[in-house]
Structures are given as structure tokens and as C-alpha cells.
Image (cartoon, rainbow, N blue to C red; front, side, top):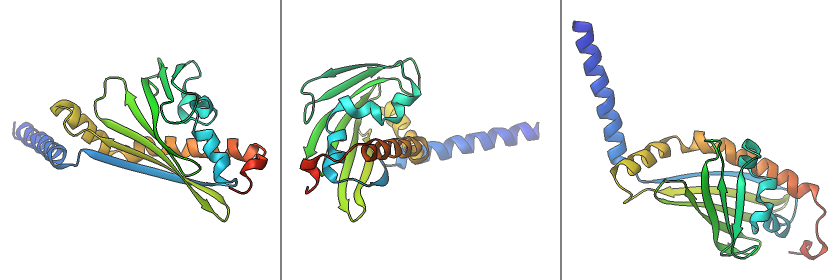
Length: 192
């Protein structure tokens, strides 16, 4: 009986610690990965500014080749939108849309995932370096004001964001590097 009582107290203690962490953890989460691509920023930017190119390097496209995609708005630039539906739980359903773009410098996408509430963004920053272009892919999430349960789930996910999402970003950047480096450099991008 004493062992059962000790086990009960230990379980209650673990639950209390988890609850405290979730109460005091920031509702914001951030993760990023980088790669250097041997190509000018303009060549990389051309891959990022249109969702029609996304599946050539997306790590999620590899997970489920049967995902259904729809595209709305302009073909590229601010306002372009891609939505998807997949039976694979690692892909799920959602959408992303370009909210900001600075030519040859940055593309920022807003994102929505199924029933998840919050503000989610993926930003790809381009920096010209001697070897070509350094691409940094950022993930930013904010679950502030989304309700107690959703906020707790979002905060819990934020604790593991680096391990959960990092490998996907690394895979995607490796694929982006392969795609861009396998294409001829357009003449109009050589001096940009």
C-alpha cells in the first residue's frame, strides 16, 4: 500500500511540474535552420516566391505524394496561396500564403494547420555570401489568446519544436539546395 501511495504522489508531482511549465512557458516558439546554396540569391528567390515550385523541395511532399493541392490568388508573390489535404497525419491539412516578400532577400508565409489556432509563420531569409546564398528558414508560432487547451497544447509543442520540426527543415533545405544547384543560372541573375 505504501508503494502505491508513493507512486500516486510521484505521479501527482510530475503532473504538477508539467502544469507549472505550461503555465509559465512563453506562448511563442521559434526554430530555424540554415544552408548555403552555391547560386545567386535571385536563383533561390525564384524557387521560393511561387508555391508551384514548393513540392520540388518540400519535405512534406515526400511524405505523401497523394496529397491534394489547390492554388489561389496570384501565381507568385504576396497573396499567392496553397492549400493541401492529406490522409497522412504527418502532413494533415492546411494552407500557407505569402504575406511579405523582398526580392532576392526574403519570403514570409503565413500558415494554418487544420483546427490549430494561433499565428504561425515560415520565413525564408536570403543572404549573399562568398560561397553563394545562405538561406535561413525560420518557424515562428504564437498561441497567445487561443484558449486554455489550445494554448497548453501549443506551448507543449513549443517545448519540442526543435526536435519535431528541425529535421523536416533540414531535409527541405537540402532538397532546395539540390534543386537550385542543378539548374542553370539564368543570365539575368548573374549580377544580382
